[in-house]
Length: 473
Image 1 (cartoon, rainbow, N blue to C red):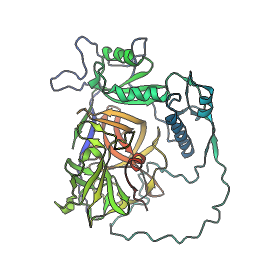
Image 2: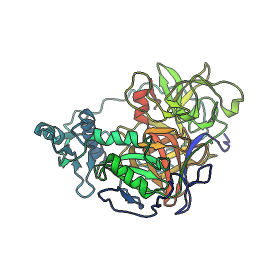
Image 3: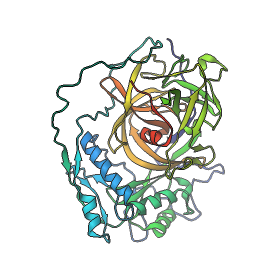
Image 4: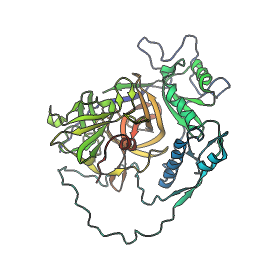
């Protein structure tokens, strides 16, 4: 089946040449205040001003599966006791998990944070970014559901597996997880001078602080951040000229539909992320900013036919991420579409370029949340498959140019082709044994002087927040 280039609604982060400043409608540099001096380079923290850095930190190699799972356990401990425990991380020198504890906390909290973590990762296979052709299929046909397995039991399935033990280091720290996430949640919507140039905020666990990304910066903003939050509690990553905006972009897919295909919505044209199932019905997942609740969706091949309807959407098209009813957490940028009678989705996903008809089977969902250094691929209607991405930040809050806030997102970077308008809603994934491991849903991205940036919602958040699961085979 011939496939045509796909277009789609997307949130874009575009960065100009070094030193450039994003301009507001009136021509004033974004965030500039009269009489305030522009900051154009790195600055150390002082008693009255926060640190500024301009070179992105080196991203480590992807963590071994057992280390990543142990880190996830440590993260769950911190989330269960955010007032006394700090966000944990993996020491890049020793490879040991570090779970900081507030200096004033009781010794029982230290014992809790440092308790041994047993991990058996022999069955974990989250894959990697794999641009090879192993497992790629073509000549799409509608296939019946797979037959029930008749394989005999594994004669070695009762063998004894000795888990690996991890014992986190528990240094005393100044700020707890609650302290830092409070700053992250507030800073982009605060009234500090120059806030319009601050566009992303995330927790830097290793340095026990919050890092705010800025497209432009003044000394007035540096000192205001220090005065409001503390000079050691916040740092600024200056990316001159960064512009977070909103614009609207794999065509001609046939029923049943695959992930990575183009879909038309009331907001423009978007990419299907992954096929989805709930109570035996057919659904698919895309980005919330691509849709509005209770609206119809269409597929290019079938013209004006209404193939499905948006049944869940966690994005307010004026303000950004919202908490779904009954939930206490933000779940990024998601929309769930239920297929109308006769229309189906299949547990496969398009790979290759924007005109490719090749696909891979989806084997399942990542067994853990994204971690710093993870490698992955993206698939979108405009740029097709792009691998070589690395996670550089997790649980990020980002403010788009139009003021909408994306919350609880993952940030990745790479060199080469960046995602473009129309890739929104598309799949984020790795490849294992020739099959796709679902990682997330594209929300936005763009280009910096040092490469490309990309934002996505963790697929595990989708399975937690929405009814149903990713289809797999």
